[in-house]
Amino acid sequence: MSLDVLRANYSNKLHKAKFIKRANLSLPCSSKNSGKKTLVLDMDETLIHCSLERKSSDDIEITIDIEEPMDKAYVSIRPYAISFLKRARKHFEIIAFTASDRSYADVILD
Image (cartoon, one colour):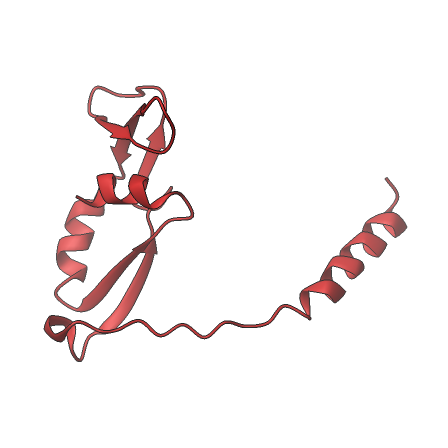
């Protein structure tokens, strides 16, 4: 692929991106977090790594209820993630984000 073709494709995508509307999102703040700033963290690949295969003996086995039959998955907690969250919650309201299914997030966060 030539450089001209790449530039043409890139500029076309950039032009389309200008028309994406911004969404304003307002989440209610809990009373126990009043006055704290909000810290939004992406669960996947930031706090944890989830795989359908066991990678380590330290992995936590979970059952995900996304499709029938339910899938088993293995979760690795990133180094220092727990201690980071314990310290951060003293200063921030923490919101965990995932692009995955809610049932997956609920199992992980519970």
